[in-house]
Amino acid sequence: MNSLAANGAHVVGLARSWPAAAEACLRVGPTCTAVACDLSDLDSVADAAGAIRALNAPLDAIIANAGTVICQP
Image (tube, rainbow, N blue to C red; front, side, top):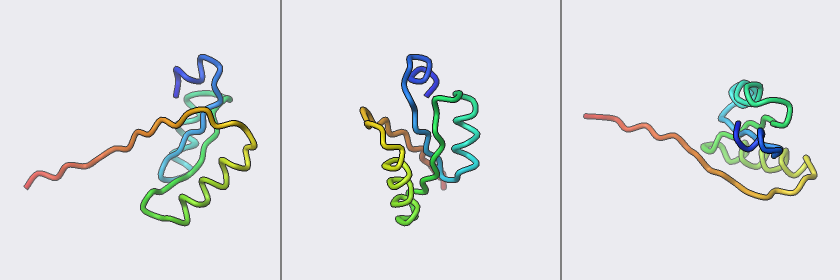
């Protein structure tokens, strides 16, 4: 996010909750828009898609980075 914003991109930062997305975007700067998107909740995904559409800006790229949890027995 930092590199994209530093090179002039408007970045949409998604996180599971709005506070988490807002915190990440706050570190990037004013060219970052926070959007909540909990992938385990389809209503949240639909709301996030609506929020991104409402920006009324072109979407040039999607960079997906999802964390995983590995439980050891």
